[in-house]
Amino acid sequence: MVRETWTDERLDDLANRVDEGFRESREDLRQFRQEVNARFSEAKTDIDARFDKVDAKFDKVDERFDRVDAKFERIEERFDSLQRLLLGGMLTVVLTVLLTRV
Image 1 (spheres, rainbow, N blue to C red):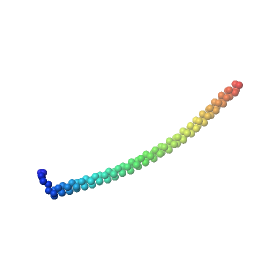
Image 2 (tube, rainbow, N blue to C red):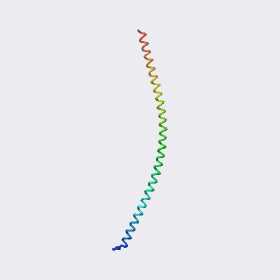
Image 3 (tube, rainbow, N blue to C red):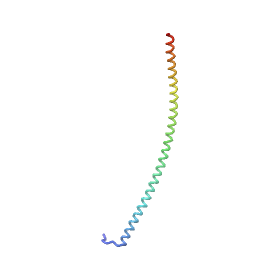
Image 4 (cartoon, one colour):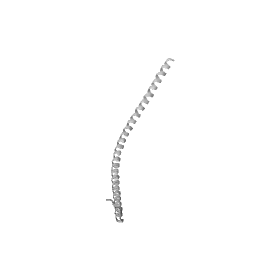
């Protein structure tokens, strides 16, 4: 049943109920924000820990690559030495052939 007239008391009651509803909504929203922030903090902590583990694994892999790089450098040095030896040997053979023909 709808009343056609509103008394001051009824308007005050309505205003109080609306105010109380907004207070409850604000409190619910505040609690929700706190809960969401707490969950995000937990998730961030977990994610940070996992990334630290991944970083540690990458550090180990990086160390292995450093060792492999060092081995390849030694192999390159040996090939350079072999190349110089072969070039020297070839020059010796060519000079020997040229000098024996003269």
